Amino acid sequence: MARYVKLADAQDLPFWRRPEALLFVMAFSMPIAFATWTALLNNFVIEVGGFDGSDNGWLHTVREIPGFFAVGVIAIIIFMREQVLGLVSLVLLGVATALTAQFPSLGGILTITMLSSIGFHYYETVNQSLQLQWLPKDRAPKMLGYLLATGSAATLLCYLLIVFTWEALGLSYNLVYMVSGGITAALALFCMFAYPQFEAPHPQVKKMVLRRRYWLYYALQFMAGARRQIFMVFAGFMMVEKFGFAVHEVTALFLINLVINMGVAPLLGHVVHRFGERNALLFEYVGLFTVFLAYGGIYMFGWGVVLAAVLYVIDHVFFGLALALKTYFQKIADPGDIAPTAAVAFTINHIAAVVLPALLGYLWLVSPAGVFGLAAGMAGVSFLLALLIPRHPEPGNETIFARPIAMRPAQ
Image 1 (cartoon, helix red, strand yellow):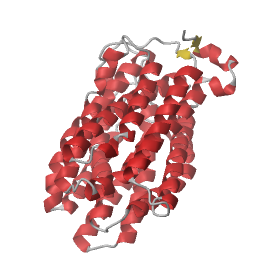
Image 2 (cartoon, helix red, strand yellow; image 1 turned 45 degrees about the vertical axis):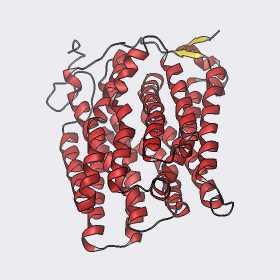
Image 3 (tube, one colour; image 1 turned 120 degrees about the vertical axis):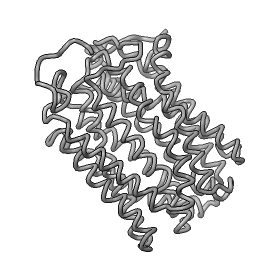
């Protein structure tokens, strides 16, 4: 029988069984499967699956379909607690990752990717909701930074093992996928039995929530999804297709990136806390605009592999500032809106993500520079939207057009 503990009483539990500890275990568990899958993916689909740019675009379109339907979380939490749903989703991600290399054909890869993506996106939707419910507003930016660093540490561990053992031990795709996916699933099962069910003080609305006063948050989520997909799909693919990176070389690049992000991620939380969501997001979008233009320059002007690798690392650092978007919403939201809005936001985030990879896969065959130019334009639009965030967002003061008044009735 599950034990239920109110959030206010959870501080009486041993430190390792508190809600914050569960968030950190989950943050560590998920990247073991997902980061390994990502590190091997480009080489796996090219060397084993024989993918070209168009096939790769379709793969990522399929991968993002569950994100588009993340709004289905709202229906599921009517019957299942968010905490349970998050851990079940984590198990699905682990099991699907473990089986990835068993299906090396185009159809097989797309199918197993769909299953792992359901686990990943439903986990991420619930995880974001639990973070914003369980973390106090005054500590949330810093804690989100530490959670990001924890995920980076798990990813770093995976990358180190791949870099130093892939060639030395002659590892196979199947073995690495099986081990990484199995560990994630095992940790998720441990969390199911080791932690009580935590009850937040504000019951969540269990229906779709769309409020006019959240419109800027929705718009920023849409642009973030479109912009990030271009990076996720094509930046790593470029390193393999254009520069011929092998598995251990791609992973070494990821490794460098993770070492930097482990140190930077906690600082990003402090930056958001110190300078506010508006300034943090503006800085992020200026940086991403510059990086994407430089990516295009690699194809237009023949710039070399060193610049491409440096840009890849810088790209990740700027994306870390996206935690400011979470805390912006936490500050303007009704407490009961967090779970349903997290689901709606994930769906909005993935509207473009479902369409763009497949379409841009065809553009990639003609003009890779054009793909990155489009991403730079999206970063520019995001910058303009971020200008509308007030210095001190709160309910009733969601944008610079709203008057800072007390909380208004739900709209």
